[in-house]
Amino acid sequence: MVKIILDAPLILISFVAAYLLRFNYLANIFPAISRGFNDYSGTLVFIVVLWLAIFKLFGVYEKKDLFDEIAILLFSTLFASFALFGFLFLYRGFWFSRLVIINAWFLSFVLLSVERIIYAWVKNRINSLGFKTKRVLILGAEEMGQTLAQRLLADKALGALPIGFIDNDPKNTGKTIANLPIVGTTSQIKNIIVSEKIDQVIFATNIISYREILDIITECEVLKVSFKIVPGILEIIASRVDIEEVGGIPLITISEIGLKGFKALIKRTMDFILSLKLLILLSPLFLIVIILIKMDSKGAIFFAQERVGKDGKTFKMFKFRSMVIDAEDLLPKLAQLSETEGHIFKIKKDPRITRIGKWLRRLSIDEWPQLFNVLIGDMSLVGPRPPLPREVIKYSPWQKKRLRIAPGITGLWQVSGRSLLPFEDMVRLDIYYIENWSLWLDIKILFKTIPTVIFAFGAY
Image (cartoon, rainbow, N blue to C red; front, side, top):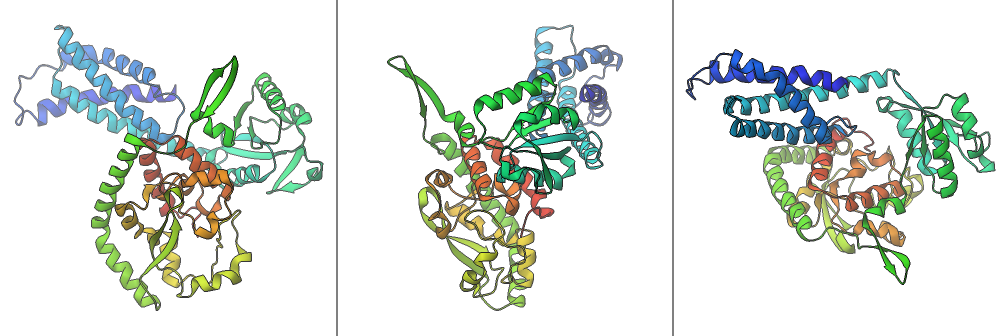
């Protein structure tokens, strides 16, 4: 409702400004007979109502990601403008300059987009100050639940304050995990929701039966408490499920995972064009980085490392060297210090990193040479993290599904926590990305990577 109240005057302002722009500033370029503003003002209320109705029809006011909302807004304003052109064609009593409509479309899209960016910023600020914060109960104190709790505690702008865990493991009774207490078991959840004034329950475990989950969801609905579920692998692959009947018995068929055909062609075309343009644009900065690396330490400028790509094929991945020359030889001595779960080695204060390398990695500048990998087709701009052969050897069969497409310079893992994510969650994100790929999803991830890199969230 708030956005509708904000949108109405902005649409009105857009059309008034478009009229003034057309007949006061563009009249010399595009001569036209000027009609009085009164000829327009009578239809402005109708136009505002029409546009708001179209926005509602297109789902502009439904809760969604900021990038998605702006994209839908673009198509909504375009459709609304075409609707006005349609009225001009069908009803002669409706008179409006076509150039005014075009100007109004552009101005309205810009103003409404800026409004949404400011609205999101204000909302995040309010959340970070503790206002309108939801009290959250996390069901499941395993790795998935702990990761979720850490993210919610670390980022107040998410507007969620985890109160504690619900866990049925008797060994965890009375314990504190990830700085949150175990407040009870599933059998006590109703009383806990009431006593702790819980606003939302998040299911972050896969060891509870479906019947028990349904019972808890029913309790949440009765108590007017919202609930969310962290998806497991079976939920993630739901988009590939087809049901067929054989002899009266329903059978579920799961189609093969991967990007094929026209989608693969679109993705490869975008990778080639953008990587070529970025290499040309960044070439002066490449030269500066090369000079800094040579001044900082001895050794090669670039570091080529064998990685595993699409369908398990290996390739040489290029990076700016950010470590000492014998970094690989020192790895066995540091292996036990890894701070990341799963088959990935990462530590925050890696002694092998050079002085300039610390900043190259923090700002992800060391990744720039991978644009050459994208250009030749070994990698993509967006995709799963390219693993090392020693990591892939330890993969379970389902984890190897992340190798069905070309690895990326950035990906959902990058904009969702980078080095902070456990390996299992990274794989889930990779599979979700493959299952739900679209050109718009790639564009969103590329845009979200910019603030992630600038603020170095989760990078080390």
